[in-house]
Amino acid sequence: MFLHFLLGICSEYKIKALPLQTKETKNKNKRTMAKKEVRCDGTYLISADKTENPKLYARMLTDGRESLYLEYYLGYSLVYNEAKDKNVTKVERRKEPLSLYLWTAPRTPLERQQNKETLELAKKIRYERQQELLEKGEGYRLKKDRQIDFIEYFQAYIDGYTKKDIRMMIIALNRFKDFLKDTPEYTKYLKGIKPEQMDKDMMVAFTEYLQSRSVGEGAKSIYQRFKKVIHYAIEHDVMAKDPCKGVVIKIDENILRKEVLSQEEIKNLIATHYDNENPNIRRAFIMSLYCGLRFCDVKDLTFANVDYSNKLLKFEQNKTKGHSASSGVIIPLNDGILSLIGQPKEGEGKDTPIFPLPSHTMCLKALRRWVKRAGIGKHITWHCARHSFAVNILNNGANIKTVASLLGHSGLKHTEKYTRAIDKLKEDAINSLPELIL
Image (cartoon, rainbow, N blue to C red; front, side, top):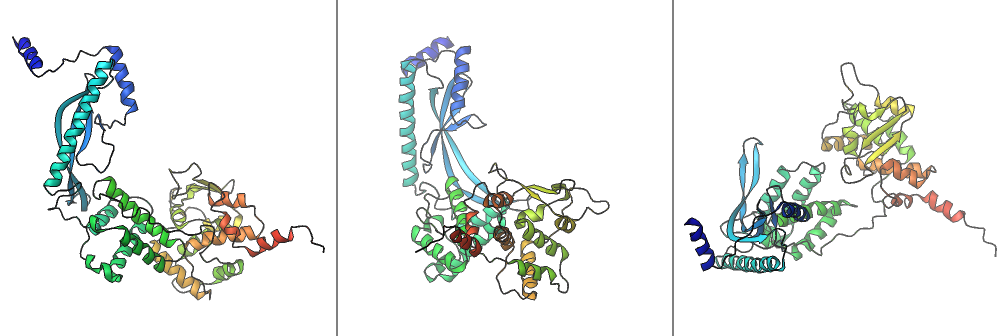
């Protein structure tokens, strides 16, 4: 009786029964799933446009079918997390099953036609639901009753940020706040700015402000971090469009803009001492001058990075670790550098930091005090040590490929800018030409 009842329903609503899947079909289904970007919960996105709300998804079923459903984005809120002791972003979503199904691996023209018609119906329903959202005033992204402040969102992003450039992320947020405060046209947004209030004109003004505040590549680096948050917000449906699109900061990357310490100035700096100096900051900066290390790398060095028997320093660059096949660096060490490094103290293991350093800000303050006491009238930051190392060894005749290898560059593009800072190399290049006799 029950079977007759089911057959009657199928006949009345013109629903065709799906046959059971064979072992061969199941294997074909697995191959089909591999081609799709199936998530760990067995679902994948069908919507091609990331701005759609709701989006059309499919869930893989064990019987060889895929169940279609819609997923609505309903905004986000900041929720206090006791375990992390800070506010975290909570995204709110809602799912709507459509009771529509696709064949995972259609075998016949009829099944492929069924998939096509079902998918067209699902997309039509998705579009109608989107229009309903618009009519209710919720828009493609955000509800009107959810007042999202981009500044708060930026701060929440930083609170959950774990990468090494977090200091630059903080600078980017503070610089944007300064821009709003210092630009009369945008001071009205100091108490809060919605994502939809940020447009291309504002970004053009922001990039001009950055270039007026920063020297060298600083403006570009800050803007890159700012755009990182913008793209994250777009990806997570907080922003509908990219206000930074088409707005760039261009610089000549082959020009060395940072100050460089000459060999005489380095000798003068090493010979200079002052009251209450931090010996670890002093040793670490000298190490950077003689090995071309970044602050983040010299701070993380341990005695395990030193091969005392072969006089080598081996480490992975924090900047490119996990992103480049050339992140590993090997630097030969002479007796003077080995003496600067020293040995682990009694009771300390190889994983002990060679240079226990305070924060970057404290190190920078100490460095500026040291440079001033040495009578060097240059704006010296920690990264100037890396530039000074490259320029000085090139000036002493080192091959550019050797310098690139010591600096951990994957190619010569970033190393070539140092050659433009060396007058001696330019002079030698001109003098290498055949003698001109008139």
